[in-house]
Length: 241
Length: 241
DNA sequence: CCGACTATACTGTATATACAACCTTATACA
DNA sequence: TGTATAAGGTTGTATATACAGTATAGTCGG
Image (cartoon, rainbow over all chains, first blue to last red; front, side):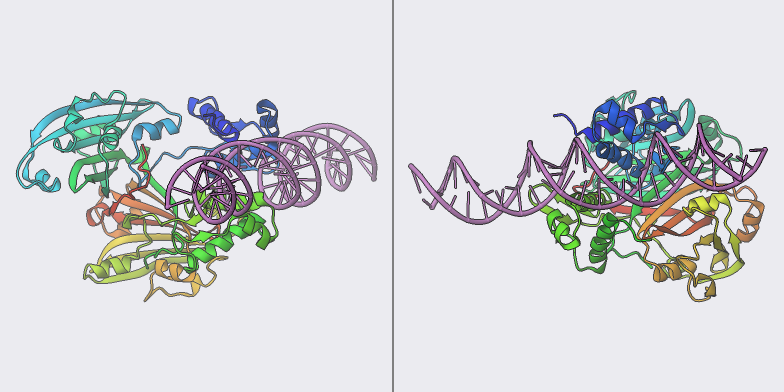
């Protein structure tokens, strides 16, 4: 039931970072201080700090101390990350409001994207996600009502559309396209950005058991967001030419 | 000078995985076996195996053993693709010319990106890649001369910098950042694009055995390029939240 | 022949201890 | 005043030891 001691120490430190009590640059307790306050051995404190460093939350300087690292405003390209959790992980406040919500008859282009033989109804949702009150993502999403019929019953106050869909439907395939765009006037107003600011447009389709679940366009203002990924290459794997 | 013991054990195991001697599913030596063969303590062997597990190379089962993990499916978006081959695959003609080539003393920001403790020299290369005569990529690359000392001896007429580096240095870690930018006047002229056309900027760092090999910024005009990936999600894999 | 028990191997966690390397600060000395 | 030295705090690594939990193989008894 109880988690290991090193995990408790990690969680304790993460709580302080998430809550904003320890901002980037703040010095966190030294190993010896953790030894005293938690009544643990230094090796256990060392493991907690070392793992948080490997995870990118802390940085350590021999002979000086351990400090909270600046969280990069970045998103993983590989995962279906939930923007609300990403923002929370940076210790910031996420909020979202629904700009439009409707059920439409799919035009041909959309029906093709959904790989539907005949025209069908689709759920359509436009949301704006904010980080500390600043718009960071414009979400324009279509959902297949046959795969996620209850999607339109959600109010998305406590759960984002991505989080709901991941929980409701097992996704087994993903497609991403990333491009740079100049936003339309409407998009610009929703995101509250200047006239010549480019945006990243992340176009995502997800499949479940051969059916397209959702088609989403996520627009990020260039100045407020970048996509990020870092990973170890498989040692045996082919790193293509 | 010599690397820590746990790092030596990690490297030893990675060598076997990289060479193909230990394929996915293969059982790796237990902690006690490593204790004997390396004459180290079990805690040191434990650290090596635990870190390799955290990095995704191994999986451990209490009471059973430690095994080489199946490499995760990665998207083409994140592979080290070579633009010359990409263009050739589309049946088009690739050409490139060098705009600038120099050896510089790394300013602080670059030294940080290269994770260098003290200032050092770096190779710097600016190239323009064209597809059927149209510029499609502006490559602005810095290279660590300690890792790839012969990089500056190449003329890159027949081989792109990416292809040379992949062949010359075993890359074991990659980092990508993608953002939308408005190009500078110089970049605009090199790419021969209009005044208000945004670009995709793909920032890439690669590591080899803990050292940063190269830092490259690849700029693609929005109208001529988009990044794409499609992949199956690993069945057991954690699709976060 | 089958089930319960036992021995064994392996991983997971935790502690106490030790030494090295590094940095900052205070102190002593010229 | 300026410099060298010493002290103390901090991280980094390594060891020996201990105990818990889990899975497997083998043994014994019914």
